[in-house]
Length: 300
Image 1 (tube, rainbow, N blue to C red):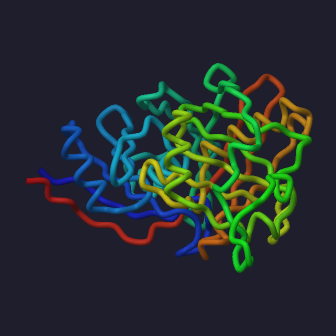
Image 2 (cartoon, rainbow, N blue to C red):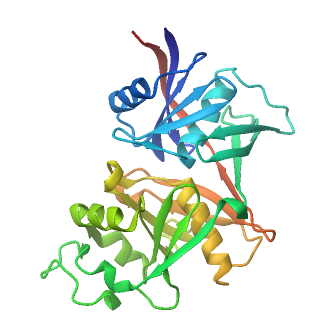
């Protein structure tokens, strides 16, 4: 059996930026084991499998996840630029079916060949989970080039005006405010300890954020998910949609504000996305992609 394969950099308009995702488009159903083996072979942080009826499955190199934002952007980019989908000039809304549920995705063609892809998370799809003490972070990070290579107090990097809280948007992350950009840039994770905490809390990873960005955005974020085989993500649409919802719930940003979120700088893969928390509780995520290469997969 043959299937189409693409590698797409998501949440960027520049090659070799953003977050790379594999996309495999198959006209037949695929066994789960086959998809997991292919994702391991592709070795991107996530690979999206597009099956008949716009059914989506998402795999890291080690496990299946129920939803992935940047792989959704990559997949719809590949579907449109390769001619599988032909959206109207004013935009066409498709229904994406995932293990987490069905979601609307609107695609707008653009003259530069890179469509704008808009996805929504609705309030029914977002759960404000447990708040946790900042002290769970002790010994999880150290500052790059620091003498002690550890923190004696979380107050050194974690402000207390917003809570540390788990947000579930289909995948769960612990959202962690950080006091400033330089501190967030200089944090070095202890990945084994992060994985243990993630397993204990039944979350995918930690999503750290601070207001302002080295590139002028509204927010700068870093995301660590070693439990599922991802040391750090260059762009995370799903986690950032949860972040925007969380910030609006606590009045830290206004509903309706179109937030520019920067990520990936510490990996040398800068990404950008716009996310808007809407008054009725939904969150709009906007992103683009760039195809790096494409080809055919022979599945024996």
